Length: 137
Image 1 (tube, one colour):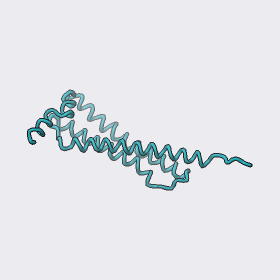
Image 2: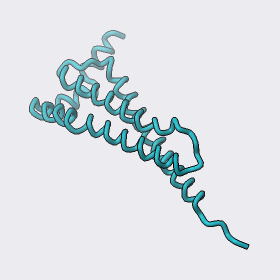
Image 3: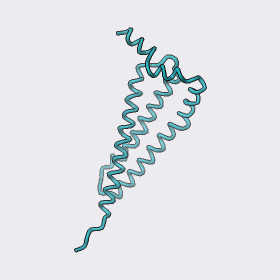
C-alpha cells in the first residue's frame, strides 16, 4: 500500500503537469493567480450576490439565502487557487494529501456556479411572469 502511494506521488497527474512548467512560467502563473484570479473571484462573487439581491427584491421569491450562493463560488474558487499556489510553491514535491481537497474545491465551485446561474434564470423568469399583462375580458 505504501509503495502504491509513493508511486502515485511520483507519477501523479499533478506532478507530470507541473513538471511541464518551467520555473519562470510557474512564477507568472503564481503572479497571475494573486493579481487576477483571486481578485476576480471576489469581484464576481460580489456582483452576482448584488444581482441576486436586486432580483429577489423585484420577484415574488423571498428566499434571501440565495444571495449567498455566489459567495460560496468565490470561497471555493479562492480555496482552489490557494491549493494551486501551494502545489506550485512546493514543486517538485507535491503535497498529495491536498490533491483531493483541491479537486473537491473545484467541483464545489462549479456546483455553486450552476446553482447561481439557475437562481438568476429562475428569478428573471419569475419577474417576467409577474410583470406580464393580464388579459382583459
